Image (cartoon, rainbow, N blue to C red; front, side, top):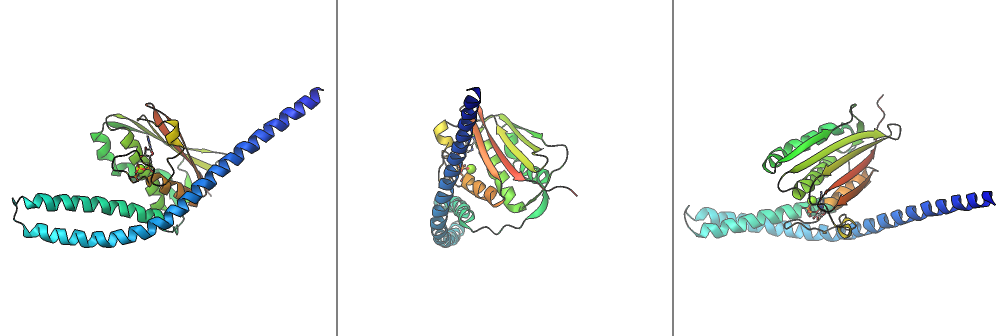
Length: 255
Ligand SMILES: Nc1ncnc2c1ncn2[C@@H]1O[C@H](COP(=O)(O)OP(=O)(O)OP(=O)(O)O)[C@@H](O)[C@H]1O
Ligand SMILES: [Mg+2]
């Protein structure tokens, strides 16, 4: 009797594990499908937009230069120029998002990439009184990645974390090796606004944003890049407490 109970218990556990795996795979498939649909659409729109924006940008700059300094019409041309710049950056995001990736994998040191990204946002951290803590693994893990793409990942995640902490907070960036040094984990923890559970399930969807000036493409791009690197990304968040993004990538064994 005991043996049967034990066996059915084991079976139930196995079934439960299989069910969880199925759910996770299903969720990933849905994300993939949404991304590829939005990607095709975005590519077409972005190219069209960028060409027109170029012409608007050049024309308004021409007008702006024609008006003397102090001419109040300059305020209008300046406003148009600012908006053109903003739209340009949105379309650049869209093009990044839609561009088929041809990654160039090279051996790299992830700590260097993290440090480089942090140096880009150093000033912003000071202004927002955000303390940065680096919890790096003692040995510099060597991985094979596309440097430029991975910088996009780190920049997007840090940019989001800083948005979540507009006035003071702590950003902890950690790395650790595990699974017999076969995997490297990079985590980004902030003490920012966090997210409600319903948002957590949408954040990798293209165009999902809660930011006033956001395009909602940052995390979709991140997701795609991590996938290209055969890694995984997940998130844990608590409203008003903070958020952790965890990336796992296959590591390279050092010879
Ligand atoms: N660290 C974080 N803390 C709280 N909310 C976050 C965090 N990171 C992402 N989010 C939520 O996920 C949404 C989507 O993020 P995503 O980076 O994809 O787009 P975005 O930052 O809004 O715009 P952009 O395209 O400019 O990056 C954000 O608008 C925000 O609501
Ligand atoms: Mg973002």
